[in-house]
Image 1 (cartoon, rainbow, N blue to C red):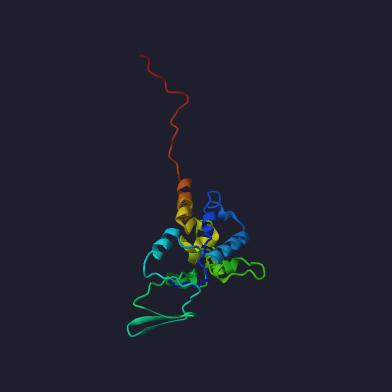
Image 2 (cartoon, one colour):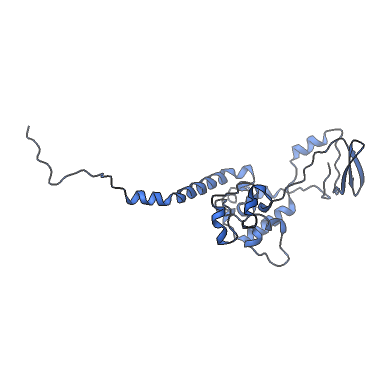
Length: 229
């Protein structure tokens, strides 16, 4: 296993954010606090689980190479040759875990909306020297995970689009990025979608209400004369 870092992470910042008082309320934090916390999160990253690490170490052929970014990868004589600062290594095959990039502008499904989706870099200006391009590329979401427009003119194009995935991390914290947060995130998303569907039909709902004329009270006064037995 090759790791770019010189040491494996040991602190898991998710564990602190998973507190019952934080998960449902992270959304309410000011943008400055969210930005600071998430910048720290990405600086720490997450460690492997202890069980996974120990099981990997138990394999006779396992070796851990720290501070070993891949500088070059090539196929030679039916083998994969990987060059790192420590030298060359030959393998029959590779399992590549390169991480992920969060940028809605890169998604082919959203190509028609490129440049129209508001990102953190559009909505928040951090103090000098604290800008983080990784955070800035994340979409700036609404309270129900909805994509927000860069300009008012873009709003109609983004109508009904929600980002319920890891890209919600900066706005919503771990609620949509970890299993521990789904108990908060799923109801929040469901409410937002239901509210949007309700508003989409609001004209018909209002018209139906204004036209409603079903009698409910059927009493009469004076009371009809009752027959005497």
